[in-house]
Length: 118
Image 1 (cartoon, rainbow, N blue to C red):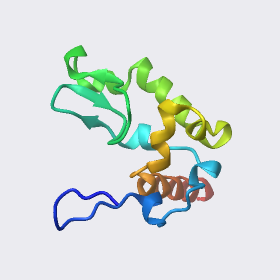
Image 2: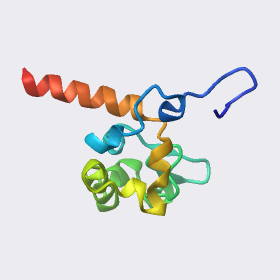
Image 3: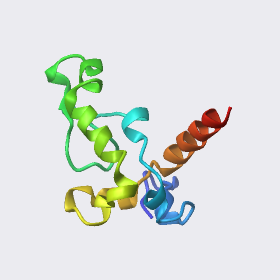
C-alpha cells in the first residue's frame, strides 16, 4: 500500500481489494471524462499514475486540450478497455491495473445506468 504521508493511507481500490480486479473486464473507464491532472512542469495527464502526458499547458488553454483530438483518442481507447483488455497486455497501459480511480469509475457508471433506466 502506498502512503502519501506518515499517517495518511492512500486508497488504491484494486490494491486494497475494495473493487474487484476484473472491474475493467466488464466496464469502460470514465476517467477521461471526469478527471484531469495538471503537473508543476506543465504536463497534463489523464490520471495520477498514467505514464504519458496527453498535452502541455504551454500548448494553450487547458480547455482546448480537454477537447483536443488527443483527449478524444484517449477517451475512445478507454471506452474499449473492457472489450479489448489492452490494460492486461500493452505495457503502456499496465498502470490501469493499479487504478486509484475505480471508485470514480464505478460511481460514474452507476449514475449513468440509473439515468438510462429513468
